[in-house]
Amino acid sequence: MKNNIFKGKKILITGHTGFKGTWLSLWLNKLGADVVGYALKPPTKPNLFEICSIKDRIISVTSDVRDFNKLQTVFREHKPEVVFHMAAQSLVKYSYAKPIETFETNIMGTANVLEACRHVPSVRAIVNVTSDKCYENLELKRGYKESDRMGGNDPYSSSKGCAELISAAYTKAFFSVKDKKQRIFLASVRAGNVIGGGDWASDRLIPDCIRAFEKNKPVIIRNPFAVRPWQHVLDPLFGYLLLARNLYEDRPEFIGGWNFGPDNKNSKPVEWVVSSLVKKWGRTAFWEIEKKKTFNESHCLMLNSSKARARLGWQPQWNLETALTKTIDWYKAYYNNQNMEQFTMDQILEYEMEAYGRNVKK
Image (cartoon, rainbow, N blue to C red; front, side):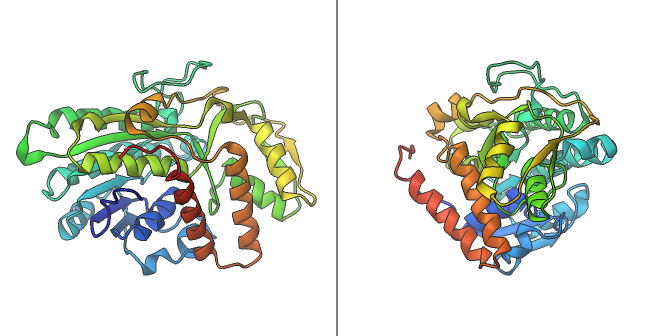
């Protein structure tokens, strides 16, 4: 990474055993960071965390962000300089079944992390990862901007809107840039529907497709016409790293909310994505529409990332077609018993090489 400030730095990642958290842990480890992870055990079997053996290369603490005392102890012991808060209950359908758990994890978990940061002088930069679903969804055809209202019509979306409000409150109440003793720069990031190899979560489109394809069963689709901002997981993670670097360098103009979404042309209906996956997988893959709708979902959801493009110099590197190809390639390699740690690192290296060939601001 150009101007790599992460080498030798103590970086703490909450949720490092999850899909996005493992990709970020691998990338930061590659950049030479001293990574400390804090999370529950991997949520699925199989999972990317164990497949890539990342536990052997970082400090991994198994615990819950709802446990403030344990969280504070880990912060005080390891003294991180940069914090990526990714731990969350991240599934919309699950939030209907477990609303209290969702609210506790996503709201109080966020407050606990920020409070722990507040009492550790080593912390200089925090990237709080929320979701594109934090916005009040008005079914707008344009992409949501950082200035749009927070909201949520389901427990998951609502909890992410609340996490954004908590970030804003901590920034104003505790992390003032004028306070030389408490000079912590906090940003909140909202990505689209991330895809990539190593995701086996339930009720998520790509993992559902892969499980069905591998068993020669139909993929059951809830809402084929729902439009989502699909993007490869490395695209938003690249944005998080660029943002963290600027925060660490004491640049207050990077505090606040940031969208990292794909180009509008890559916001496609579920039906389009599944049809593309079927073609790329080949063999006997096919899909069907679920007969009974179990819960309400937004029809159209897109992000406006013009702020990140103009002020951070970030832009998506892999379009949706490429992202789907890289994702299918990963799963095929996995089922062909290839070395997935090396395969995953090779995809990160390939992404880096493409990203640095473009205009990324220093």
